[in-house]
Image 1: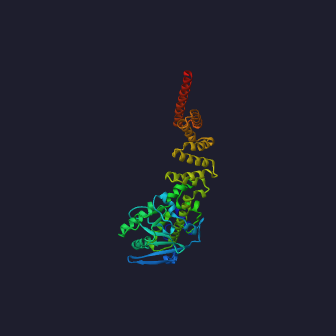
Image 2 (image 1 turned 90 degrees about the horizontal axis):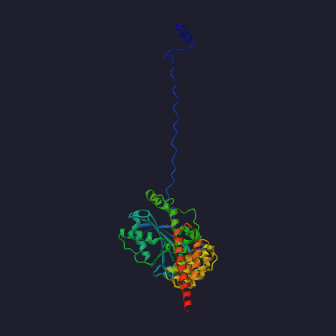
Image 3 (image 1 turned 180 degrees about the vertical axis):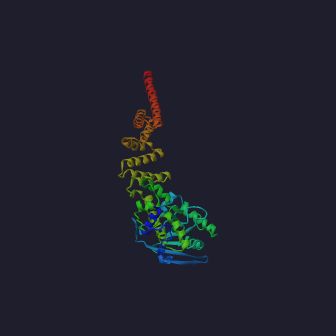
Length: 427
């Protein structure tokens, strides 16, 4: 049976084992794809991207420098540079407690771009400066193509500083100037930055505009105050250090032109910000924003500048929201109280108290005035009760203080009435 089955299979062409199998024809090899070429953008030298730049040289070496010339008739945001250049920095002297020049021609605007935010190894690879010369604003940018070019930049910067006694920066007192002074020390070059008058615009900006704008970063001030709109060429400041490190490694300047643009606009915006600041402190009555005027008045009051009352009174005349209307009156009343003119402050406290639905500060001030100065205990009690009625039941400390005041006033009134009755009976 088995033999018959095998015979049938052989007749059908089926063979047992692998002896009769034909060898398979070899497969053609799979084609291997050649690797796609990786596109690398051509190296862009500085001179190509910044054709207005040049190589500068002094006894200590060379570096790259770019000059931008802004005619004074040019508009930058809301300001014409001619108007900005006409301001008198000395108006800021009482606020900054230092001597300042009559003319902006004596000011050097300065801003750095650095390899990092802090630390002994941080270097200012770009120093941008601005100054008025021959009827134009010149923005000059000193740039290190490599770290060995730091000393020649510091030397030429020192020579320029001899012509301009006053510095203007934005946060320069905290960052730029200490960094540059350290780099002068590290390079054993005489420090030209010591003991110079310095207008750091960040500090006036905080006093004048932070209440209204919140952020007083230079970019926020450009958008919300100066009317400056940067182009897409700008670069976020946080990316600048890594872009410079990449440039030093590759010497490919592609993108570095954006750093130059960023620094250039910083300098020009500082010029218009100085103008805006001087205008606010020298003539706050020309401003129609109640909160800004009130901020200037508060700053003047803190420094005991004699125009504080005039400024605060102007703030109370301006149209604004109710909460600002109340704030301006509270600021003026606080100033008058500090001047020991509480009777003059009373009308302003009354205006605020009569329009308040939650705040009780004006009521308490009136209660204090009538108890201790006017000696009108019934009015003091009335204002205390009104404050208590407005105070939240969850404000236990506030309510306890008002209850204590009310009880004291009730005792005083009772004693006063008893004294009056006793005197009448004695008569």
